[in-house]
Length: 173
Image (cartoon, helix red, strand yellow):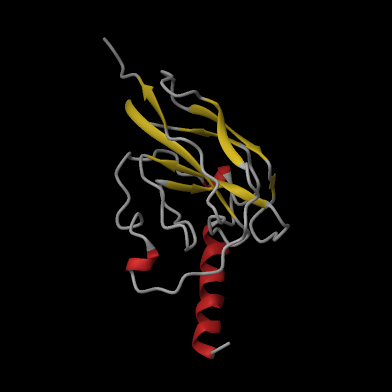
């Protein structure tokens, strides 16, 4: 393997592991609901080298146990993640057919051939958490789950949930 590619993989691995080292305790207290900047652009268009992806078994899926699509919820919102056909393992654990959750808040799926970004819109649960409480401002919010492998890279094919929309009501006088 060329030295430059080896250095790239080492750097990408370090960034990915650092980005996902924590779990629900590292989740931001109040996602602003702003769109992510540039993270939705596929890596193929950015001139970067795609990283190897872990295979996912046929039929594997992630989903929301709670809340449900269309729910009106009070903040902080209790969110529970479900998984079938794969197992949960913390970041850095390369067990076959395993991964950890990433919660996407008010944003689209990121590039699937690069590590999932870490921001207020892309919350990592590298400790293997399967639930969280999230402070959300009043208004409508979209949520989606995306499973990442030991390096925070989506599986091949990606294992993601349907997008759900929830509403946090405003304070009325």
